[in-house]
Length: 149
Ligand code: FES
Image (tube, rainbow, N blue to C red; front, side, top):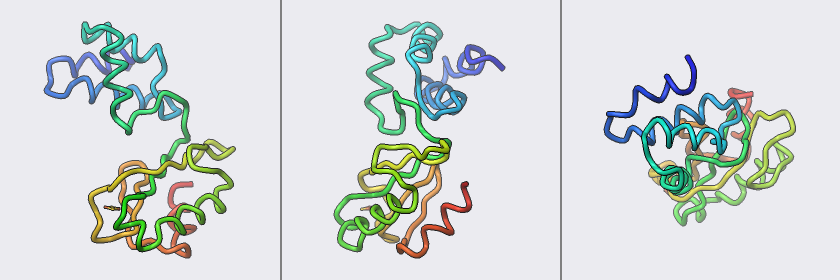
């Protein structure tokens, strides 16, 4: 199915633009929205390009630059911070060989930070794509990542 057809189905749905942008991002192969994707969405939804651009840049789940196949988002809000999210982050940086905001050379993972993921009860926590991983320890990370590689 082409991109245009894939997003046309969302035009009359509540929150349709967000769903369409998610679909375009998923189909990009690099987890991001290109300027062409933004223009296509504007055309299909009959909206000004600037307003689609504004929507896409408002939500942190959308990226305007290419990312890895899997996006890791480590929570850096206070409840996670006090139980060691910085250790988790530095272990991930070491394990993956990247800094926050970077993508591994094989294109598998992009490492990002995020505000509270809403699962403070299992702090420290991170999301990989749509999946929550909680009660993290530096020792638990390699096994979790292996499940995505
Ligand atoms: S503070 Fe980390 S999940 Fe809420």
